[in-house]
Length: 124
Image (tube, rainbow, N blue to C red; front, top):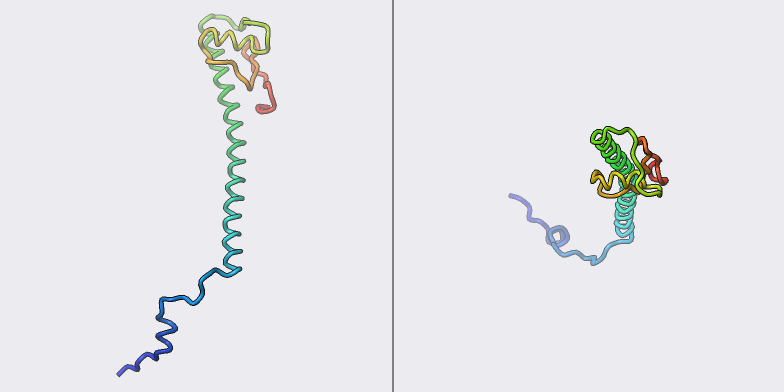
């Protein structure tokens, strides 16, 4: 026959009530450390994505200008873009008027032969 479980053991181990009602300082520090680590990783990742976005935007802008220039040269049979206006966007405006671009580029200046020159520090 099995021995009965002592009452003190039952009360101490099988009780669903907790005697403490808060968290310890160690638990609080551990929780804050985990949250701080997650925030630090999120900030770092956002800066990484921001840098990649600028590089991809430069590449897309360069491809768009090159394609529009190639189409203009193919349509007109010319190898030189005529200037429209006298500012730094004068060759891009020719492509805008030919409806090959929606607007001028803020990252590159187009040359008469279709070459690209970066207009800022973003696309070196």
